[in-house]
Image (tube, rainbow over all chains, first blue to last red; front, side):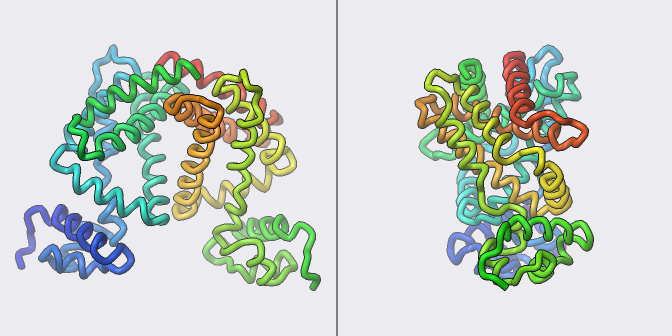
Length: 189
Length: 189
């Protein structure tokens, strides 16, 4: 087997999700996943430290959000900068062709408390990264923290709507709309 | 040894925190904790299912927050209801005599990723409980979600300030002030 495998990482994720659905997360081993993907165990470990990390993997979200905020026009308000970052997520991560695999990943996490715990902590790290990226634009600390929380909530709600496969909307557009709704809701708190 | 032990739960928590500080969380067993508290292993297991739960224990926060929101005057805005709940936390949980033990618990959690994960998931559950309590007052869904996130953020920031032992302020008062600041910060997002 060649040392380099095209799309090995994606194939491992797809194989893992198939197996988790067929026999359960607990009953699937790293060897099972590698075999199903037609790869070796050592290829698996070149991409992921353990089984759990197949679901979390390299953290591309943090970089996408931080870069999206940095790339917003200088005159953008904090929430406009956040919306710019959510657009980037829609372009690079939550794309239509990945909708199904992302929904399957979500289902595995939702049915395992220990995976939910990991996901919850990753969520906090994401919000902290957004807060830091806003501060680097000169946004005052408390404003940055509120904008980051509103962004996290918009991302969560928009994700729920986007995951519904009957919904053909673009993630970035859904997120922008949600962020606007949340801003209005916040004004009536 | 008598079957009923006064304050057994509190004694176990104090003993556990002492041992975690002395020899580390990993190197402390349930038996060590029970012995240090002058109690038996079976008394430990009557109070906690495992070592990790000594740090999380019975979830009194959720009930305090939900009850505090329900008890707010009918005319209270969503954020006033949240402030009422944070006052309850200040009266019943984050009291001056518990400041030290709470800070020590915090330090143990902060230095263990697996405990941080548990804490993060508990935080999400707390926010969901606050959202639900607000909805039961007739607050629209999105407004309830935003108010709950602002409440969670106020609780976190106020907790950081309150934990600083040089700060003699009452938790409820700190939280109210923080919530007001966050509301203003939100308006400038």
